[in-house]
Amino acid sequence: MTLTRETPTTTLPPVDRAPLRRRRRTRALQQTAAVAVTLFMGLPIYLVGLAALSSRESLAEFPRSFLPTDLSVETMAAFLGSTGIAPAAVNSLLAGLYTVFFSLLVGAPGGYALARYAFRGRESYQLVLLLTRALPIVVLSIPLAQVFLATGMYDSVAAVVAVHTALALPTTVLITASIFVSVPRDLEEAALLFGCTRFGAFRRVVLPLSLPGVAASSIFTFVLSWNEVLAAAVLTLDRRTLPAQVLSSLRESPLAYRFAGGFALVIPALLFIFLMRRYLLNMWGSRVG
Image (cartoon, rainbow, N blue to C red):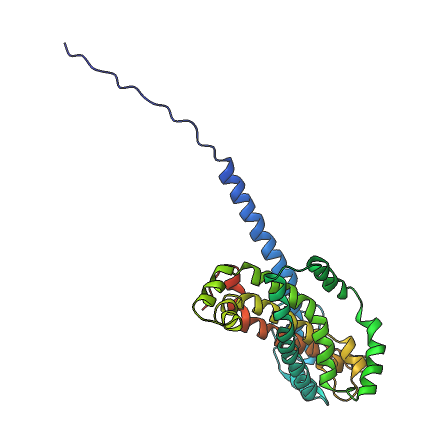
């Protein structure tokens, strides 16, 4: 007779899958929201681009096909060949690049001072910076026109750059300040110990680590300058930027011209964002080659 020993069995507690299900639901909602926002932003650009790259005959068709069926560069060629479009595009490009340069030249040191130095009224100063954006440009347009007429700057790209730089400075200061705060002060102090000057430590240590924030500020500034139309329309007559030139001719222009103008206004800003995307995505923890 053989005796068998019974081995005790341990019963594991049931696995709580509720946190995993909640995490999956949250991720699905986030992805759905991202797709919805992308469609909300991209669908108008697609429709404008489709109309701008279609022939004039296809624009009159109803119902209009959602897919490209009769692509043509006739509308864009007619728009780009219109009087004043090419000089206006050059003026817009110059205004945008100069605005980015001067806003960073003035705003980045201001953001560095906010991030590194504690002084009385710092929080109030940041609030005042935001409040300057609350003042509509239409209130300032006539006084600015009088000032530029008196100084001889009226109807020039320099006048547009000055106004756009003033509009972009508050956000440039605040964006760069938030990025400089995230750079450890110990790295800067180590550079000072190794013989760098204050400016050298900023240039060799702080600035390379802050390029994502600088890129984000540059994108915002360029898009703001490229799309701004009211100040450019009031402060210029013969040397208009592209949005002001398109706005001045909308009333007499056909429908095809309007679509081509809208598409031409969108493309350069998208190209600038595409060129700066690697720095912006690196700030969010992604890498783009």
